[in-house]
Image (tube, rainbow, N blue to C red; front, side, top):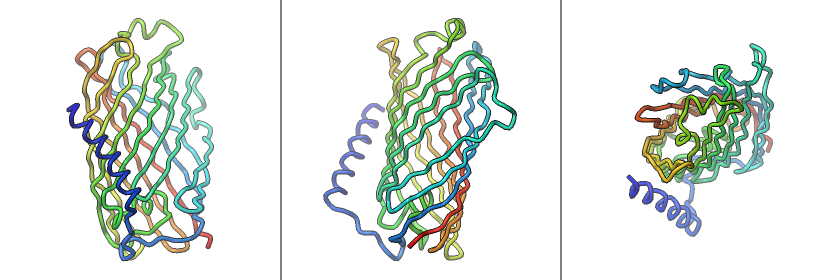
Length: 288
């Protein structure tokens, strides 16, 4: 599997180089682009949950779901979304912290994502986790398939189409505690690691009623984890699921997008499974 990971990383880099030298022309019968400013509002619901067979910790664990509202502005291919977190409906729990920072870039062939999470107080337990991750997803058929149409709304998918994809991600995760809780419940070998994952996938956008669409994408592949505390490594699997449903008109748009990440950590022949979901409702218009 090491060879598979290395080949996928090298292939992604090579494809980026080739496309930079020989830009792909978009098939206008499949994809419509606009020279306008795309702007709108969004509401996002985010949830993070842990499940495990590891008996020493009290699983399942979850953070209170977070709700975020904000604005999005895309003058062209590049843009930004700025949001604020709404107050917790159940009131903020003492000693709970849930901080997240996301940066996304939607290119013609790629999605580049960088995020940082700091989660503390799972089920009220005195420990937390930091998670820094960067990923790149490359679409091979960007001539006919547009991921920007479904998730950034800067283009419109005119006819149904799909594309193979390659995803590479690297991340660093670290468990921490202000008390002796982790000393008593989790071996130091498993508390901090860096991982590299790569996977193959496919995305497809089904267009109906002219402007309506359903988009689904999946990437699946092996992940290697290097433990910080020792010269020790282990293999596991990662998966990335994306879904979208919307109506994309020349003057306005509305849609629902979902991003679902699943990854495992092996602990003493057992496992801890992370489940992260982010569902967002979008509505907006275009300024010519």
